[in-house]
Image 1 (tube, rainbow, N blue to C red):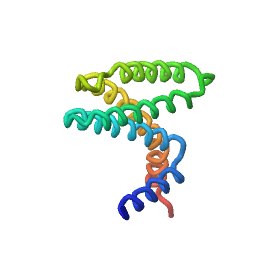
Image 2: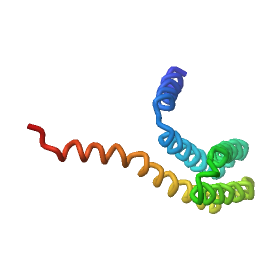
Image 3: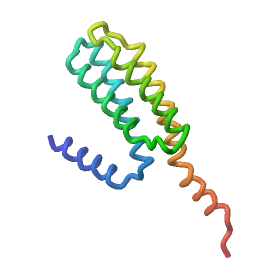
Length: 138
């Protein structure tokens, strides 16, 4: 119980200090974690738990989709289509049939998007550090 409170405080601190880009990466991480746990629950026949985990991942994908600024152009529209595709795939998954191939496909898409966002979020920091260390100060 104490460990949970400590991890909750740590997570709250991470969220409160995160940039918007870092929050997006955290959302992807959460959806990926929920879907990986979903697969373990399906294999152990914990279908109710698996269903709830799938729903949590779907809720994250829905929030990512709903937060898009559709006036931003093609990137937003393309992301919307990818999120819509993932939602359709997850909705079609039959927990009782122990269907994991479709979930693996969604995990793959989420991982690719997460990695791209992580690169974007970390790039300015890496460039700043590179510039700072490449100058010699007298």
